[in-house]
Structure formats: structure tokens, C-alpha cells
Length: 199
Image 1 (cartoon, rainbow, N blue to C red):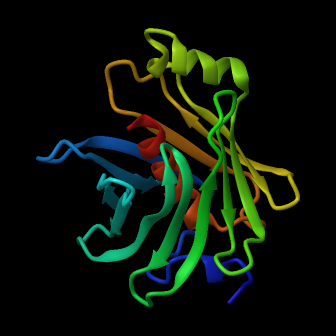
Image 2 (cartoon, helix red, strand yellow):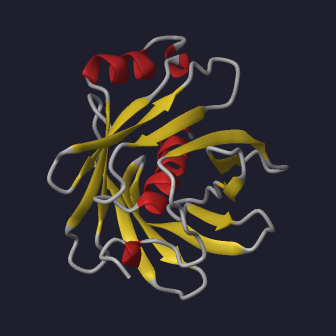
């Protein structure tokens, strides 16, 4: 096992560098549903954002419907807070997504669940775009774009959204260096970030 594999769900093995994340609809309770696919278009996993007061949760299932991992809020205030990724097969806590509430830039960090050491950072593309999304009447249609950085701050990829005024959000994830960040949690984080910030 490599150092980064300890942060990845045991039932998922992603070896590629390009992935698509899409909000595919809403369930009967109007909760957002998401799907992640590889470059061949095969489904990697799905989830439904289960919104509860201070108990938000994302159960991730594979193409057959078997739960592989889940993300649960452990400390939230609006969109700021900590979210714990746990392996459903081993019940092991894998990592923490944390976010600071900011009007000017959205920054999420992936951290070790024990010592809180930084594993990766996902940051939005600056204050003007963030303000436009939050304040303009059609701002939510402006596509998100995030930069992925490793623990040293070096750029290792991006998460780019498409204009989505009338459609559900869709993102293309491109990793230029898969050796310095945990791949599966990056893909999972793209879903969690969109769901938390959009709802």
C-alpha cells in the first residue's frame, strides 16, 4: 500500500487522470443525486445528498448499489465545517474535508483524520467569479472552476464546470499528477463541494 492509498476507499481503485461528475437529478424527496464516471463513461459511484439539520450525509454506492463509503458532517455552520469520509467496508475513517466560510473564495482542504495534516487543497478561481456567482441574478449559471493543489501547494489538476443555468451541474476533473494526491477523495470532494455550496 502506498502512503496515499490509506486515504482511499478499499472498494474503489481509480487509476486514470480524467473523470466526470454530474448532478443527474433529484430523488422523490427532491434531494440532489450525483454520479461519477471515468473517461470511458462507466459509472464509478453514485450518491444522494441527504440533507438533515447539521447532519448532512452522502452515502456513495457502486454501479450495483452496494455502499462503498460515506461522507458525514461532523461540524457544520452553513457551508463551513468538517465532513468525514469513512470506508463502508472497513468502517475506517479515511480523511476530513474542511471548509472555511468566505465570500471571496471557496477553499476546501483534504486532511488526515488523525493528525489533521494537509493532503490536498481545492480552491475556487478568485473573488470576482465567486462574487458574481453569489450576487448576480443569473450568477448560479456561471460555471465553477477549481484548482487542485498538493500538500506543498503545487498545482496538480483542475475541476471545471459547464455553464448550467437550466441544467444540472457537470464537472470535468483533470489530474496532471496522480502521485501526490489521493484520487478517489478528489472525485468525491467534487460532489460534496457542489452539493454543499449549491444547496
